[in-house]
Length: 165
Image (cartoon, rainbow, N blue to C red; front, side, top):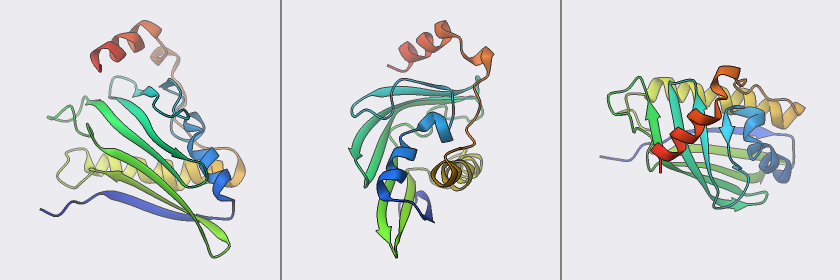
Protein backbone atom coordinates (compact mmCIF):
# COMPACT_ATOMS: atom_id res chain seq x y z
CA UNK A 1 0.00 0.00 0.00
CA UNK A 2 1.34 3.40 -0.96
CA UNK A 3 1.98 5.63 2.04
CA UNK A 4 -0.35 8.59 2.20
CA UNK A 5 0.20 11.55 4.47
CA UNK A 6 -1.89 14.60 5.15
CA UNK A 7 -0.26 17.79 3.92
CA UNK A 8 -1.15 21.37 3.24
CA UNK A 9 0.88 24.26 1.87
CA UNK A 10 0.66 28.02 2.18
CA UNK A 11 2.53 31.00 0.79
CA UNK A 12 2.99 34.01 3.07
CA UNK A 13 4.56 37.43 2.74
CA UNK A 14 6.93 36.98 5.70
CA UNK A 15 10.53 35.82 6.05
CA UNK A 16 11.41 32.16 6.60
CA UNK A 17 12.65 33.09 10.08
CA UNK A 18 9.34 34.75 10.96
CA UNK A 19 7.47 31.62 9.83
CA UNK A 20 9.84 29.42 11.85
CA UNK A 21 9.29 31.51 14.98
CA UNK A 22 5.50 31.39 14.55
CA UNK A 23 5.54 27.59 14.19
CA UNK A 24 7.48 27.31 17.44
CA UNK A 25 4.91 29.48 19.22
CA UNK A 26 2.65 26.42 19.56
CA UNK A 27 0.47 28.06 22.23
CA UNK A 28 -0.09 30.97 19.85
CA UNK A 29 -1.68 28.94 17.04
CA UNK A 30 -2.48 25.32 18.09
CA UNK A 31 -3.51 25.27 21.71
CA UNK A 32 -2.86 26.88 25.05
CA UNK A 33 -3.17 23.33 26.46
CA UNK A 34 0.52 22.50 26.15
CA UNK A 35 2.83 21.45 28.95
CA UNK A 36 6.52 21.65 28.15
CA UNK A 37 8.71 23.51 25.65
CA UNK A 38 8.04 22.56 22.03
CA UNK A 39 10.55 25.15 20.82
CA UNK A 40 13.52 23.31 22.35
CA UNK A 41 15.29 20.46 20.59
CA UNK A 42 14.89 17.01 22.17
CA UNK A 43 12.16 18.23 24.55
CA UNK A 44 9.13 16.07 25.15
CA UNK A 45 5.88 17.94 25.67
CA UNK A 46 2.23 17.22 26.17
CA UNK A 47 -0.75 18.55 24.22
CA UNK A 48 -4.30 17.85 25.37
CA UNK A 49 -7.87 18.77 24.62
CA UNK A 50 -10.26 17.98 27.46
CA UNK A 51 -10.44 14.20 27.91
CA UNK A 52 -10.83 13.74 24.15
CA UNK A 53 -7.26 13.91 22.88
CA UNK A 54 -3.82 13.97 24.40
CA UNK A 55 -0.48 13.39 22.81
CA UNK A 56 3.13 13.32 23.92
CA UNK A 57 5.44 14.80 21.31
CA UNK A 58 9.17 15.25 21.07
CA UNK A 59 10.79 18.02 19.08
CA UNK A 60 13.37 16.13 17.05
CA UNK A 61 14.49 18.69 14.48
CA UNK A 62 14.85 22.46 14.57
CA UNK A 63 16.56 24.17 11.66
CA UNK A 64 16.01 27.94 11.99
CA UNK A 65 14.16 29.35 9.01
CA UNK A 66 13.92 25.91 7.35
CA UNK A 67 12.37 23.06 9.29
CA UNK A 68 10.62 21.85 12.46
CA UNK A 69 9.85 18.17 13.13
CA UNK A 70 7.91 16.61 15.99
CA UNK A 71 7.80 12.90 16.74
CA UNK A 72 4.56 11.56 18.23
CA UNK A 73 5.79 9.47 21.16
CA UNK A 74 2.34 8.48 22.37
CA UNK A 75 -1.25 9.41 21.66
CA UNK A 76 -4.74 8.90 23.03
CA UNK A 77 -8.13 9.56 21.44
CA UNK A 78 -11.32 8.77 23.31
CA UNK A 79 -13.33 8.52 20.07
CA UNK A 80 -11.40 5.86 18.15
CA UNK A 81 -11.19 2.10 18.57
CA UNK A 82 -7.41 2.33 18.25
CA UNK A 83 -6.63 4.83 21.00
CA UNK A 84 -3.05 5.17 19.76
CA UNK A 85 -3.62 6.51 16.25
CA UNK A 86 -0.83 9.01 15.55
CA UNK A 87 1.73 7.08 17.65
CA UNK A 88 5.12 7.11 15.89
CA UNK A 89 3.87 9.61 13.28
CA UNK A 90 5.97 12.66 12.38
CA UNK A 91 4.63 16.19 12.15
CA UNK A 92 6.80 18.18 9.77
CA UNK A 93 6.97 21.88 8.91
CA UNK A 94 9.21 22.71 5.92
CA UNK A 95 9.95 26.34 5.16
CA UNK A 96 11.46 27.71 1.95
CA UNK A 97 11.66 30.99 0.05
CA UNK A 98 9.48 31.03 -3.06
CA UNK A 99 8.84 33.85 -5.53
CA UNK A 100 9.77 36.57 -3.01
CA UNK A 101 7.56 35.04 -0.33
CA UNK A 102 7.86 32.10 2.05
CA UNK A 103 6.28 28.72 1.46
CA UNK A 104 5.29 26.56 4.41
CA UNK A 105 4.62 22.91 3.74
CA UNK A 106 3.00 21.10 6.64
CA UNK A 107 2.71 17.33 6.68
CA UNK A 108 1.48 14.85 9.21
CA UNK A 109 3.41 11.80 8.10
CA UNK A 110 1.34 8.74 8.84
CA UNK A 111 -2.07 10.42 8.99
CA UNK A 112 -3.77 8.45 6.24
CA UNK A 113 -7.36 7.69 5.19
CA UNK A 114 -7.33 4.33 7.00
CA UNK A 115 -7.12 6.19 10.35
CA UNK A 116 -10.47 6.37 12.07
CA UNK A 117 -9.67 9.97 13.03
CA UNK A 118 -8.67 10.93 9.47
CA UNK A 119 -11.61 13.25 8.65
CA UNK A 120 -11.70 14.92 12.06
CA UNK A 121 -7.91 15.23 12.20
CA UNK A 122 -7.47 16.62 8.68
CA UNK A 123 -10.25 19.16 9.30
CA UNK A 124 -8.55 20.19 12.55
CA UNK A 125 -5.07 20.44 10.99
CA UNK A 126 -6.47 22.45 8.08
CA UNK A 127 -8.00 24.92 10.53
CA UNK A 128 -4.90 25.15 12.72
CA UNK A 129 -2.46 25.53 9.82
CA UNK A 130 -4.45 27.46 7.19
CA UNK A 131 -6.41 29.67 9.59
CA UNK A 132 -4.69 29.91 12.96
CA UNK A 133 -1.00 29.56 12.07
CA UNK A 134 -1.48 31.70 8.97
CA UNK A 135 -3.10 34.37 11.12
CA UNK A 136 -0.26 34.23 13.64
CA UNK A 137 2.31 34.55 10.86
CA UNK A 138 0.54 37.37 9.03
CA UNK A 139 -0.96 39.39 11.90
CA UNK A 140 0.85 38.26 15.05
CA UNK A 141 -2.37 36.79 16.48
CA UNK A 142 -3.39 33.17 15.99
CA UNK A 143 -6.60 31.34 16.82
CA UNK A 144 -5.49 28.58 19.20
CA UNK A 145 -7.73 26.48 21.36
CA UNK A 146 -8.10 28.53 24.51
CA UNK A 147 -7.14 26.84 27.73
CA UNK A 148 -10.11 25.57 29.66
CA UNK A 149 -9.50 26.28 33.34
CA UNK A 150 -10.85 22.83 34.17
CA UNK A 151 -8.25 21.32 31.86
CA UNK A 152 -5.41 22.97 33.72
CA UNK A 153 -5.24 20.44 36.48
CA UNK A 154 -1.58 19.78 37.24
CA UNK A 155 -2.29 16.43 38.91
CA UNK A 156 -4.08 15.22 35.79
CA UNK A 157 -1.29 16.48 33.54
CA UNK A 158 1.31 14.68 35.66
CA UNK A 159 -0.80 11.50 35.54
CA UNK A 160 -1.03 11.72 31.73
CA UNK A 161 2.73 12.22 31.47
CA UNK A 162 3.35 9.11 33.53
CA UNK A 163 0.84 7.10 31.48
CA UNK A 164 2.51 8.18 28.25
CA UNK A 165 6.07 7.35 29.27
